[in-house]
Length: 225
Image (cartoon, rainbow, N blue to C red; front, side, top):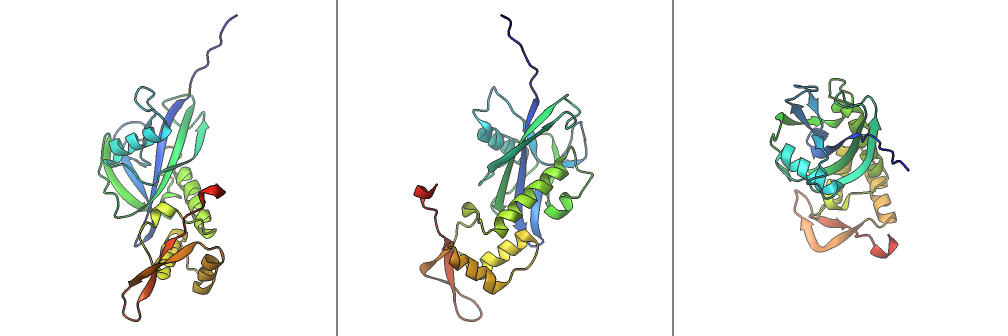
């Protein structure tokens, strides 16, 4: 009996890190120093290393530290893409894609290994930029659509809203991610109907007029998962 062997795909981890900045939803890009696509902008990423990576999430965080100089909070795997023409270095390439939405001030990325520069770019611009390396424009477009669909359904990322917020602040953040305005009455009615937020007793934000009540997301019941 003979055992067949099969060539393995070239396997990478790609990181799509979003943040809300004054201009709206932005994505973190790096400028490559090596071929292929040297000098072009791309998503931060790296090759999966079976000698050091205990699992996919540890690989994602290792690559984040190597490329960005910092781990990335709230990271989650949203899928994989593969094909025979994705990477000129291999006949078949697979990418495991991780995504995170982080407060813009929470991470301070700096260029790491094989990175010439690092910068935030408006996500809508990056999703249509045909000059990005590999198929990263399409990956950003898919990830942006995914995160906007979740926010539109009011599937709010719990880790992102750690501190108490006013309903006005919550709506402004959702609008920045979605890229359009929301009706205030409709937004607050949906929050109440679905029981997504609760007031933080005795906490208010002082403003020019009357103090605004602070809220927090309602934690999911672990029995429902």
